[in-house]
Length: 227
Image (cartoon, rainbow, N blue to C red; front, side, top):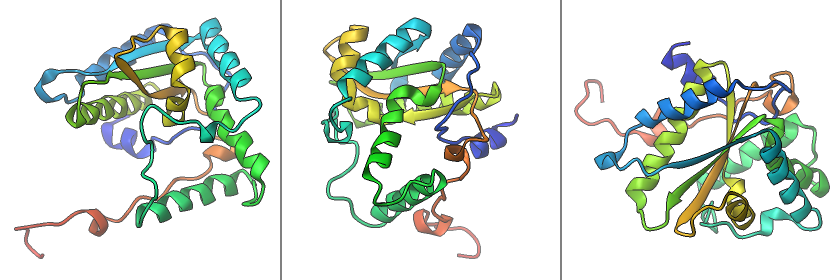
């Protein structure tokens, strides 16, 4: 798979097959993603990789924790989205929700169905491998950008191994539980988790492609012929 196909075929996979991922592949993937661009070569990312019994344990702990309340109302380590949201970002987010819940045939007024789907984040959508990604709290916006570069590089490389991924900022709401479970140093912030596995492309949750803004919406060309 070339880099163009890897970028184009990446999706946020929301259901995975019951198929393990070889440990050697996981190690190679995490290591090779370390070639991501990093300002000053700081390489600010820290990764915790889980599978098997430890992954089952953290999923069980979080399931018990959210059994009686809505995790969408739990404060995360950082503001995941601006509040209030404004255009064009509000419409983009709402349209994505329409696609996802429409594919799953969950009605707009089905509050329980929507909550149940959100809670599947904390099952890692059945993925056999989960990464928790942290960054030191004292680092700034430049290093946050580097962290995003690492995560995206990892996801594109995963496609080269025939794997799918799902980056999950929702796990930042569970930072206390995850931090205690993994003994994450208090000076590190849980940014997100990433589910890794072989995607179930027959599952309705993976049956759509979220749209992207047209070039004219986000790029201004200066000095090019034909402007």
